[in-house]
Amino acid sequence: MRVNTLIVFVGLAGLLCRMAPLEAALSPDSRGTASVAFLSMAADARAAGLGNAMTAIADDATAMNWNPAGMLQIESMSASLMQAAYVGDSRFGSASFGGRFLKDWAAGFSYRQMTAGTVQRTDESGNDLGSFRPMDFSAGAGMAWRSEENAVGAVVKRIQSQLEDKASTWAMDFGFRSKPFRDDRVALGLALRNVGGKIKYQSATESLPTVVSGGLSFQARKDWLLVAEMNLPSNDQAAVALAAEHAQRLTSTMSVFGRFGYNTSQGRSADGFSAGMGALVSAMRLDYALNLQGSSNRPTHIFSLSYAF
Image (tube, rainbow, N blue to C red; front, side, top):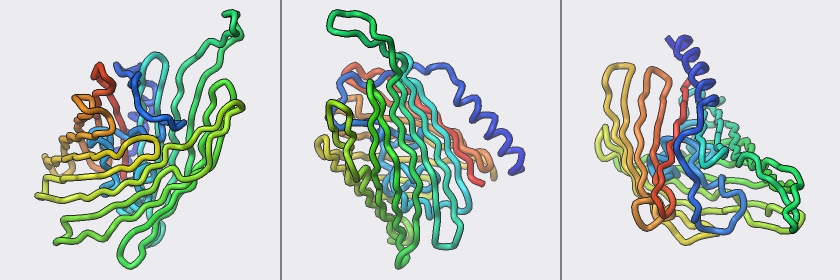
């Protein structure tokens, strides 16, 4: 059964990467001035549906992007792929892999990439100087380990941004996840992301979007998970995210999920809301999320695929 599911996963992953552009748009009035803003974007559809409130609940390969300590929640190995198309030819994708290699140790790898299609370049007189393709990416490796029954983790990543010229730097993420308490129904997560150097272009130097996050999860019932999170970004105001996830088991090998969230950093009206759904079949999970972004509340559709080995 696992082998057949893995074959389906590989097939769907290939289809996901070749999908035609989805109806979506980057927010034209996004806030903040830090460079490589894609580092703050949801790298999987589950997170997008929950308003990015993942610091306390990240429990698979995508924990590399939210809280590396969460990798210790992986039972064996986990892989995740996400692909989404935005305005014009812009695309955002991610791939993560993580696993336990000892009882109290886990390791993982992640890659995220944002491309913006082809941009024409002209001089002050409007003469054509050719074109270029802006692209940002980050590639990281991390570890998590258990310390006094709690989990801690760290990620080292290389970040590169290419506009008309290329710039790169190194950064680190750090994470903590408490041992569940209150009858194993409550867990605390803390993370410090994008700590490191600055992106230095030929004509400008820009800071990374460093953020401190603290989250609390509460298993209200067996089928209801509630999450609250506070984020303190370096390039914006403090923000709060609230989310809920409902799980419904259909058979011994199939479950479906419903999710909704609200994140104040994404706006003060409808564009802060998000919703999503997912389906788990054996070891494979397909997730979808809908975000409303920008002052026009235009929809962003996000799909991701994950597999537990």
